[in-house]
Length: 201
Ligand code: GTP
Ligand code: MG
Image 1 (tube, helix red, strand yellow):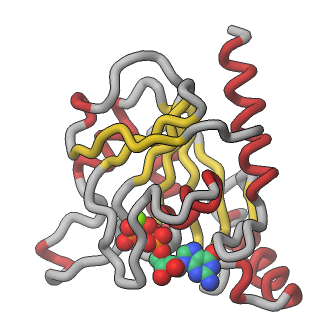
Image 2 (cartoon, protein in one colour):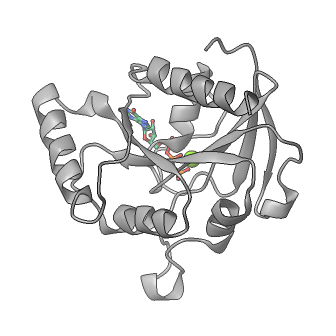
Image 3 (cartoon, helix red, strand yellow):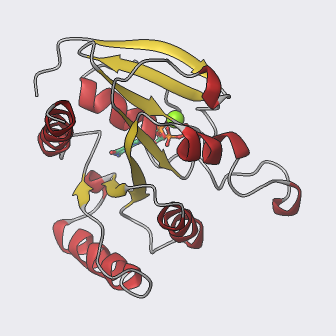
């Protein structure tokens, strides 16, 4: 897919205030610092369309980006990063779960997972919740540039084995790096196909 335009539209914490209309949208979700905002910049080949930071907790709101004037990418705050003690903070912020439950235009969510780490309970719990809520999602492994091919393969295998403990099959996944644009073409082609299949309805 050729990207001819990518514009920031709005930020808010209320799903009811998100853009009206019927353009399909795709949301990036995952732990703080996993690389959600960087992935948006990589896909759009823009340095700072979405705000990124080395410190977790940069994205705080639901951010809509209008792409090619006919679909949206959505950058969400991360979960799993609590400045305050765990007991005093809900694991998943309410406006994030409400976004997934209520947003009719959402085609699917991409759950971002840092490929360097072993499966984290919070990611497994979030995917479990998406499954129970019947919200379609795919997995995007991030920061692939940080691992050698053998280590990457080993981690992906381990992830798949872990997923198969609770899922019938491994969800479709993509391997990406925002540093060297790995996975850009496949993700964009995939979204393009989904957009086409929706407009054919
Ligand atoms: P929050 O908004 O805080 O939830 O974080 P986020 O998931 O949006 O992460 P962000 O894109 O801000 O990136 C966090 C850090 O990881 C930044 O320092 C990025 O430069 C770095 N980073 C993101 N993606 C990659 C990648 O593919 N490779 C490498 N090497 N670093 C990355
Ligand atoms: Mg962010």
